[in-house]
Image (cartoon, rainbow, N blue to C red):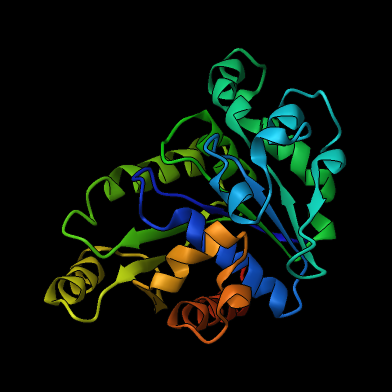
Length: 260
């Protein structure tokens, strides 16, 4: 059975989409069959892989509305690897939050769509919106684990307690098998004492799995989306590519862990 990982943090600008794209591409590079799902109406994961998001007719929005079969929304990411696939999103998804609230079993809609295809992939990565709304709840209800990117900045812990509280609520009421996959530090600047202090502070205060890999602040990582490529194709020798490769290997080492 494929492992489903929601990449979530209600704070924007923490490297969530960057992590979703590059972790997925590095997993695919290592021979894993990966489905990346964009469930953010900004569609940055979609455009970051070179697709014109607002020209697409079949997206996750149409899947959630039951207008199309989920297989009709899956796109093979041709410019990347033979085993990387995407379900895209665009601005149409903005209306889904309100529409889902009126649906029966609204928290399980995404899960019901994904369950029939999850065995076809080694990993399914869900890039969540920067909010703890109904789309994020749907992603966590469907997923096995949650991966939390944290930016190395002064307010890194702000809102993290709320995210963990939400995960615990979903675990208690909707998905008892959900656990935190791990916390990954992003935008680390080795030149500043602040980045080091943030890492130490989070480690001291957070009783969660923290990945050994730390993602550096890297110009090539920032450039890659404008070229529609993940970092391991845009600049394989960059520090960003090396870091996401190491993160992928850590995630693979956890692949068959099933928490009790």
